[in-house]
Length: 469
Image 1 (cartoon, rainbow, N blue to C red):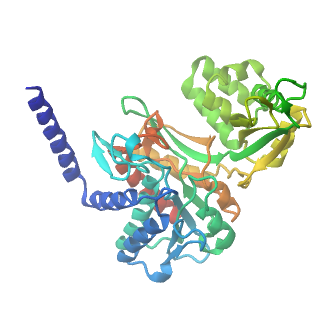
Image 2 (cartoon, rainbow, N blue to C red):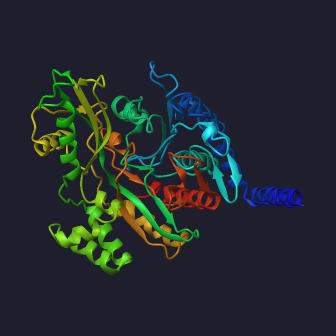
């Protein structure tokens, strides 16, 4: 009997999924096919190929009517599998500057034995799409590629030239980075007044209710520092006062106890004011008090109880790795630690290195930057020209849901575009669950309805930006 019930439940689930797939619009079905192909093309650094994914998207763009000169595939000779593409839809105006749609197509590693489902097979189940990259960032990449195809098929003639860049390397710190490569080597190809990127989105509560939308306007600079102490060492039976491990642990303990000062950008001032109004109570009052007076210690103590707010207010540095010693019966000759810093926008990595050295106060501890050294994250302006249309359109697509500009405490490829003078914004529109949807973790997923709704919103928003004067 139990077997029959389980079998019946499985049949109902399959029928429900089939019915859902059949109920989508023809344009959504075409998008789903593109999204499936992109997601199921493995683009991990270890075993995948961004180049292959880019070639497949290029084939779709050309099938839609883009010529060979409109689509540029690129790959560095020493990184043949980490390529990408740039596609261009020419605008009608000779004076209005282009806009750039950016998305990365590489994904974090995923082992089949760890996942409930095959991470490189798109599975629709229980109202979700499951797969590695289903959310981060192939949802955005598929939406932008699909938009370019729809523009061409509709005969859309924008005032602005619209450019699409699909790049590799965002998820791998030490890998070749396509956005950096374009900014340094092919700046003319991607030149634009602004870029629309990942980093924004929307938040759902546990019941799937839309709580808030966010546009990312700025992010922190990511930089790792190596803390290292050395010592002549010796036999462990004859301890000496200068011990490499003790010196290192004392240094990282001081870093752990140190609080960087509160800082604000135009974006975070607006965020804490609006979020303070929405949150209310003691926390909301404290958030607004900090905007008025960053030196308000009592307000700081309240707001900093929330780890995400705490990080948004300042530079943070945290020890993430340690190694020391060479034998159980020997005094350590070397001890090392990695300290990962998320640096407030506009602050240089050298300045933070110097500040860490002052905090440690021990010249025997060397502090050096670990490559790669990313560009300083320069916050883009909180421009009404960018934020205004997105907020107005959100009221149409997601009525009653507030939109707030945010500064990301994580990192995207936006700092690399600053090398080419392109301010970059993380777009709202695709709503995610409060737990992060398993991005970078196990069983990554995205709500089917959220993906389709976000696609409609971003397609219309891109058109609005493309016809701005």
